Length: 284
Length: 276
Ligand SMILES: Nc1ncnc2c1ncn2[C@@H]1O[C@H](COP(=O)(O)OP(=O)(O)OP(=O)(O)O)[C@@H](O)[C@H]1O
Ligand SMILES: Nc1ncnc2c1ncn2[C@@H]1O[C@H](COP(=O)(O)OP(=O)(O)O)[C@@H](O)[C@H]1O
Ligand SMILES: [Mg+2]
Ligand SMILES: [Mg+2]
Image (cartoon, rainbow over the protein chains, first blue to last red):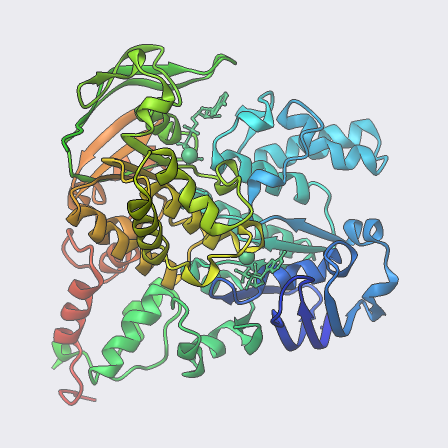
């Protein structure tokens, strides 16, 4: 797989900030992969997302160093609008994603496609499909500003995936969702990956992150602490240094390992709880 | 300081015709810690807004201490029941954290000393002392949420309602919230918390109210709720990860805490007792 996004020695600080928020970040995102960015709050995840979609430096000025390329081209050569078509961005705070241009959910989701000049019939088809996919058919006529938090978060996600951008940058899309809704969002993201999209996800829910992502990027105080296949990163003792939540099954297995229980491997999915431990005394 | 909250057969319909709450009856004694959980759109936020007078019931009655909310203004009620909005941006209107937090206690008419003390206490408890002079809009979302929590607890209300404080929090933020709940309990505060984090609920709450489709469908202990399939299904909930692993291992129902599962597994798989 080829790299679709590359960052080389990228550092950034906000106009009013004294400190560098990202420090010497180098990373590579492969086309068609599902990469999750994990890290504690304030580690720079949202800032990194804003660089990937060109909001930095187009909107937030500040100081940006290093090289960023998208499909081999220097990112600074792209217009913000051009980037917007390539890179779909779902905001961390769903309350600010809603444009408010239309007074109903259907219109809100259709709005981006209208702007692109997509034929009306196709717009209808695509919006219907997304309303069903994201489970918000029953909200289609509601005012987007009169929705519950989780409902708004679904509308925000829908309004981006309906555009079918090649790259999806999704900043904590499930923060306001109920547990089943959260799983559904991960399934939707997986579906996008199957359609060939490249996924960059920021999430704290590590059980699901571990189950769904191909690769992890671990940010720690503005630096890339680790990047690699999900399983390798979680099994590496270095991960503990970032003080991030482990998947629950991993946490439990590592705790037992410390108590002297041998592991066949470091589990990262719930189902592996039945096979990860060695030497079942019950079998003696 | 006794502010009991009672919902007596309360229903609420928004102006656009959406009925968000139907026949809610709930009794929250003073000083209790309660979690409200349940599917998106179930009516949780609406229910708590009825408790602090931001909304008034369409039918039924809401009592806050001796008061019926229909006879009181939101301003009066918000002195007894502090509400931290689900969306922090609905609440923040100062350019500096310290001004934002100080606003509430000043508005309550506390004397200068109490204003300073309680502002500092709230800022410390919320882990934002390093951000006192920061503009809240330059802070990450999750820390902005702590700014709004600080500004509400600094008002020293009897009842504090937190609407999804766990959303987007990392491990450190969750630990901070846990500690805060304990502090507030010591002070005798009633704390009502809406959350979608099932581990957090199991760890910190004795009483859990479950909502689905405009109604309260369960009210009890974690051990009662997380092993009832029909309730979980109706409210789009999942039991904590530990319970799911317990089920995979074929363990008896009732397991909810990590420590219980670790103890069990340690017993089962002990290093050195192996037979190849
Ligand atoms: N201002 C409003 N006008 C009209 N309908 C509304 C308004 N706010 C919420 N609703 C509707 O009322 C119902 C309950 O919403 P509420 O915000 O109480 O849900 P919730 O349980 O807090 O959900 P979430 O977990 O997503 O925050 C939903 O169907 C929602 O669409
Ligand atoms: N607009 C801004 N102006 C100044 N500093 C900012 C701004 N946005 C974020 N920051 C700072 O940058 C750092 C990283 O923030 P952010 O990227 O939001 O982290 P994360 O998404 O990992 O929680 C934090 O210290 C934050 O206070
Ligand atoms: Mg962020
Ligand atoms: Mg809500």
